[in-house]
Length: 121
Image 1: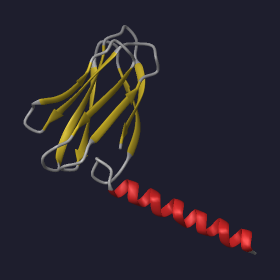
Image 2: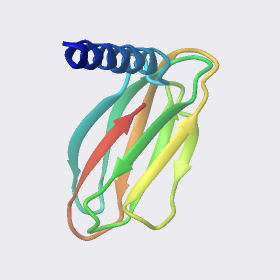
Image 3: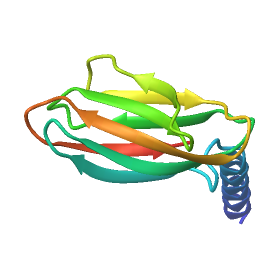
């Protein structure tokens, strides 16, 4: 019986810490994950909402076939973060002054499509 109680207590702590982490996440609404495809020599974009005063982190992990360039663009069209490191993955970070919508742009520089996973914190 003690083992069962200890197991439930540990599970409750894990759930509480996960909820606290999500509440403090940079993306409004907490972490997100999506899978998309960008055509060869083309770009794809997705809206994300970032919370004021907190580090908003967007990661893009491509399938490894092509070089991806990623930009984080404000509602006004200003590029606030860029990752152009000649790889198939990107990390974009920004601490916005106010909660707002941003656009993540994923550019595929290769000659074949690239399936990628986009994550926000």
